[in-house]
Image (tube, rainbow, N blue to C red; front, side):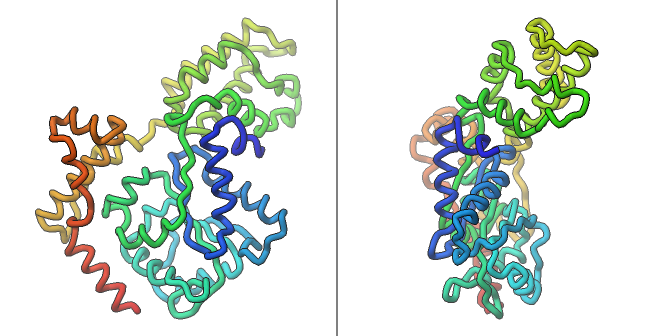
Length: 343
């Protein structure tokens, strides 16, 4: 199972090595792990944790690893301290950090003010905190509708990004075979003979040609592996010998099914194409937020700010001024006042 994280992709391999180091950083700085859905963030954290624990580095807060969804984070001082106390001497991973409410962010912002490397509001606890998100870093950093700038600054002291197949797809064939092995099809009673990993040029060409469209990442490979195995059961029937012609037919069948029926249509592309208006913003705030969103969308759509400015017929360098420094000032002031009151 380690192969799915550590081999094939240079960018993923670099991200994994960085993750292992950052998970045990001596200063207990906060770590955020980002990457599109299906890029293996959860699995990579689990795998890295096991390796660290095997190295017997208990003093670095790795007695136990726990994951919690951001929506389950408490919204009161007492409950935040109770949560941290529950995970004393553990590593706590808060998943989908962008789903935190303003109130949750306010409380965590205070709790993350360290005292001798410990976290908490009224009491302090020895916990290592990790955050994850499937959002683009630029969106998290610049869009106040996702995270407060101050909160982002506090949780992003260390950042690890796992690449999607849009950024690097050269390892997709190896990743498919690793996924196949992970499925343990040989344990399926009566169909052990179909557990042989598929090796044919038709499959490899499909994976390589279509890799950039695997918005679900490893989840898409999970689906493809399961479909392939089940179509073997369907098309071979009582036959046990693997035939090239049948394998090609399986590839064409799963290709058709996957593209037209089972593939997850990622909402990631729509994150920046819908502008949300929230109460309490002035018109200047809204215009500023809109510019920030256009800036993020432009880079995501065209690759660079320069190309985006050209396509949108803007002057070169226009977008560099579209930042959050002058945006949502009243909203930011309210956040700072709340933090001071809760201290």
